[in-house]
Length: 61
Image (cartoon, rainbow, N blue to C red):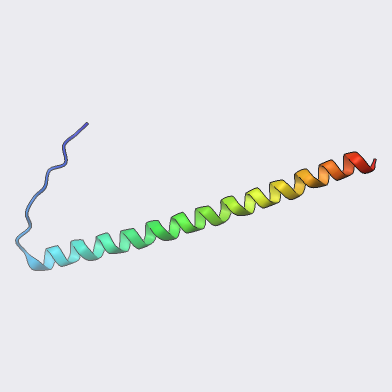
């Protein structure tokens, strides 16, 4: 494993840009996680419906 090196940044504008970047990155990650969770729920429900349909078809015929 590599060590994470912490460097002090003395430029206030650079610190502000880094903070903005981190905030944007956090927002994008949160959106990606929400989108992924929605897809997984959709796939789960679709799988359940298909499974129930197969069980029903096997019972009916």
